[in-house]
Image (cartoon, rainbow, N blue to C red; front, side, top):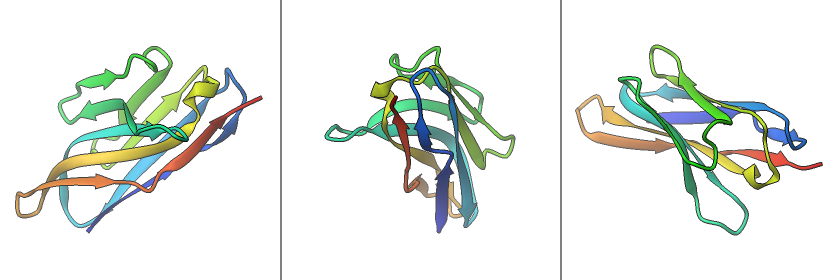
Length: 120
């Protein structure tokens, strides 16, 4: 099995910064893309950012210019650097990895989430 573990969440004041990390471990897994999603209380989960193995990066309009997604060379860890945080960024942040397992079957794995609270 493949596991994703997020870390770095916490409480921060508006305008502050946080850096989230997501590390993959477990069975051999060829990762093609990793991304971040978030779910605010009472709302549906929404996409935040994605980075693919080839280097392409995309952001949701709501975070563009404030958040930066990056990864290590092995594509086993992905980061989300968040600047100028706003109260509306408060949510559980989830990491997702998509790729193929050792047999070539498509695989999609989610982390357990890490809570980000932006409040004064």
